[in-house]
Amino acid sequence: MELWVGLTIAGAFLQNLRSLLQKRLTGELSVNGAAYVRFVYAIPFAWFYVAYIWEGRLPEINFAFIAYVIAGACTQIIATSALVAAVSGSHFAVGTALSKTEAVQAALLGLLLLGDAISGLAMTGIAVSLVGVFFLSGSIRTKDFLRGDASVWYGVLAGTAFALCSVCFRGASLALEVDLETIDPAQKAQTLGFAERAGFTLAVTLTLQTLLMGIYLYLREPGQMVKVATNWPIGIWVGLIGSISSIFWFSAMTLQNAAIVRALGQIELLFTLVTSIFFLRERVRAREIAGMCLLVFGILLLV
Image (cartoon, rainbow, N blue to C red; front, side, top):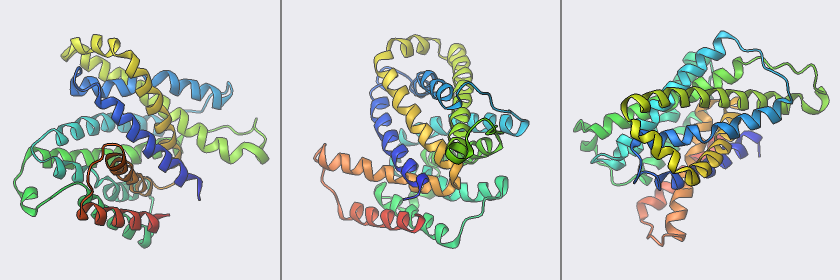
């Protein structure tokens, strides 16, 4: 198994766990307040990781890194809010499915912004896995896409924003200059090369997102800041698990095309379905079995 594959699967699993914890906060916090928790409580863990992995050294930051981080941070905030709005509407399945088109959109954006071309086999895998996602997302009818319901457009926006932020995070990580002269090249060059880039990119991104959303909440939803603070027992776990998940995601996208990583990351849906079957004792339907098979087949084409 290639390293990026293991990192992506681990990141998807932990992301599913973080989402379950974060869901417990939605009863007390607003959409933006719940989204803010994942950023503010993850910062200490992200910077601790940076301090450990960089061993007291500092990266050489350039304009491209700053531009990609700002674009990625902003579009991820938009994507998170759009996804919550999409699944909160009257067409939950449609909104969810459209948000998962991020892999296809990331393939195009990656080619345009970074020159990341992908093979025909990988593109086939992305397409097959996307069909599997549609099967898993629920009973979707063609007319649902034509009604112009807000959930549809929020789903499209979420997919586009997630695709753009993934490509930008990969661009930022690749643009970061890493000084490896002080490290034994025979032992650490490759490992610390991608790990340092990914860790620092994540820490800077989380810091920027916390500042931006903090200013917004202070001005528009001041009461949410107090609620975010009082929910620290759950928030700490959301931050810890979320930061580890993001480290895996960012590392994988440093090593591999963002579109392929996001496509493989759809394995998170399988984790969610397995949880519902074995822990919640929900019945699995034929459509969901077909979706699982297509998703697995598409993933096998990718790896």
